[in-house]
Length: 122
Length: 122
DNA sequence: CTAACGTTTCCATTATTCTGGAAATATGGA
DNA sequence: TCCATATTTCCAGAATAATGGAAACGTTAG
Image (cartoon, rainbow over all chains, first blue to last red; front, side, top):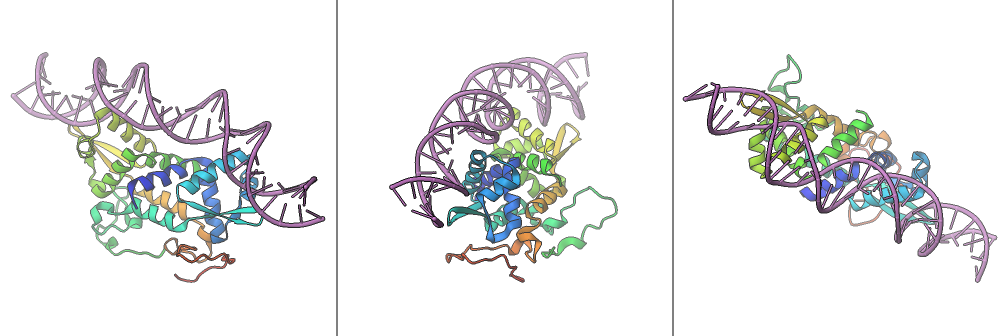
């Protein structure tokens, strides 16, 4: 993922309504949700909702498909994963520091070697 | 992690210079980097750099410690991990959809079927 | 065709953020 | 003490983003 794409995606998520919309779509899975349902659930007026949905779409984090009279929005999971990877790559210089294991000087009695192997399952 | 915290963190990352700074710090690991080195590497004037470092710090994504005449900044890995978790939780309704496995209709072929069912293990 | 519904566009107002020069503030050394 | 170096604060101009009412647009059913 390129830096500019990442900035666009992060900008899209850096706003209360859009973040709420995105998380709703993440929950909804590939099936997605109609624009109206989203607006109803989050209590957003149509114009505002549409503005934010357009933002998420422009950022590549959501897609839409027409289904009858409804427009169904769904999260772009692949893009979300790319973004997460972009943020965590080369964590600690790439040396034995799986993302979930990055815990700097925060705690006291932790070892310094045991986390070298990545645990990809959460 | 709370929504407002997430928005603050995402806002902090949603800007080219700050994203670059953060990734530099992620690479640097817990050792961190002096403010000056960051500015040098990214060619940012002092005022601009300080502005963005303050932003990252306010957002909880970086911390600073004084070391002699230098101020050393380092990434707050724990916060970064919280943020990633926040974005990916309840992916696909929580049904057997580990973050890295969320791949909806990404491929060239479209799938307009009801994919509300979980895919076991990608 | 017409009516009804769902969604988007238009628009103006308001609010927030980015930028960087210059000056102020810390820190350590001579 | 005084100087050099490192970083932050002050400031203000320029740019960008959020909001929501009203109207326009698309789609389907009757």
